[in-house]
Length: 291
Ligand code: ADP
Ligand code: MG
Image 1 (tube, rainbow, N blue to C red):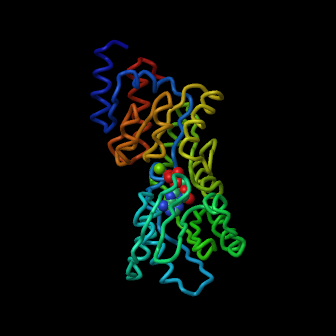
Image 2 (cartoon, rainbow, N blue to C red):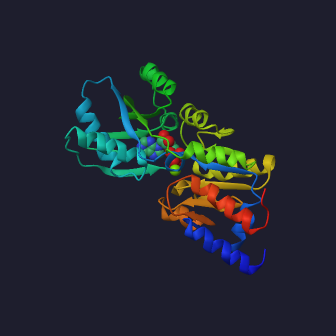
Image 3 (cartoon, rainbow, N blue to C red):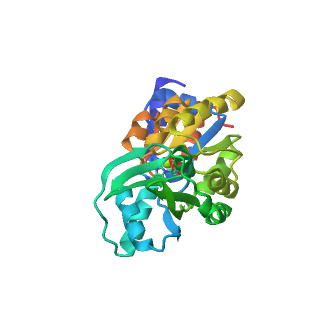
């Protein structure tokens, strides 16, 4: 393609809500064989809700207030869901000290005299928390494709919450359109295998990598490249930045975090995954490679 046609192509894409930050991304995208999507906030709305709450202690309200107070210190969408659940019950949140987010795991903090841990099973394993008392509710959440959030206080598992994040209304359509263009679709998620697979099955995704830590997302991109060739990666979060940077074409959802946008070659102005299809079409047309 000539410099002029690249200019026309990027202009056309911009009108359609797709920002190509570099001309070679327009070139790169038509060569992509597989596109990997982050799940949370990309294929899903990124606005999960608390659907379940299980505690043994019989002090549900006080415990939820403590958990919400800890989550107020976290940036994760799950944290917002838990804060809303506490707000809906009109709970007053206690003071929190020494809050520390642990990427891909959750968060720990001090509430009054107690040390609280809030996060996934990986966090509990890492901190050697025995979660066997919650085996049955955890299995129930997994069966429903929900994401479990576990809470430990002073080294003892005390609560499990279930959260669920609705799939975006256009995700299925976007994936079908990519398949129709001969592009394979993968999902790379930090969420549990059961929750990730439930969404992937629903959307018709070919390949799922779940329980991936942020630095593992870049590795997943490299592995996909080995098997399929050039890789596009679509994501919205801080945890997606390494994968966006290492993909052949990194595509950030414009409603996502600045860190993701800065790491990307292409930015989608809206949260709609169908904009990825638009980007592919503009790139193929511009490169005179209409298939
Ligand atoms: P993702 O965007 O796929 O959720 P992350 O790496 O941000 O990936 O998080 C991975 C997992 O770690 C989450 O799915 C969740 O189980 C857990 N997690 C991270 N932060 C929190 C938090 N503040 N509260 C509860 N769980 C969390
Ligand atoms: Mg995300």
